[in-house]
Image 1 (cartoon, rainbow, N blue to C red):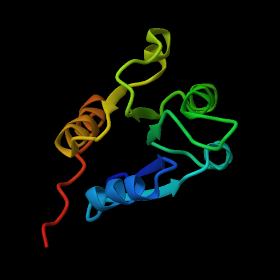
Image 2 (spheres, one colour):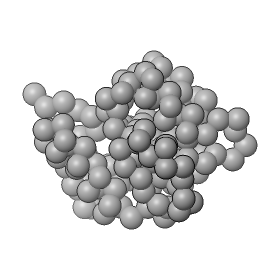
Image 3 (cartoon, rainbow, N blue to C red):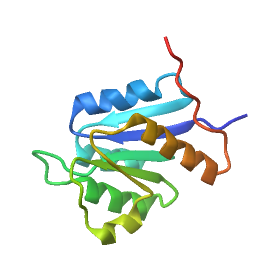
Image 4 (cartoon, rainbow, N blue to C red):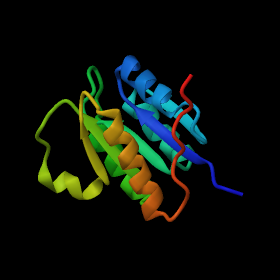
Amino acid sequence: MEKIHRILIVDDDKDQRLLFINLLKGCDVIIDEVGDPLVAIEMIDQNSYDIAIVDLMFKFSIADGVDIVKFIRKKAQQTFIICCTGFSEINSGFMNDIDAFLLKPVDFGNLRCTLNKFCTDKKIKYINEPAII
């Protein structure tokens, strides 16, 4: 039996989270989504995620995507981390902690290729193309 992937989407923009969810709809995945980085850290502490899609910048929060990534790397090194941001520059030392970096607005073709790279690296079946309705 194939493993069902569990994905965490962390972005303070609800519309952006819904875009990710709609892209992954029809795929054989379990999706958790959250807009608060502190809640995301609690969720990561309580659950095991195969993939985390994390925005780097959060408005009105004492934590940000960097905090989330650091927590994931401490708790669950095997989680494939995709960071998304509208900023074209990030700290180069931080790049060692993430598996993929996508600029916003996210090109969903690039996101799909990135997710399938995760599957290839793990030698598991690709995340299915979503059904077109």
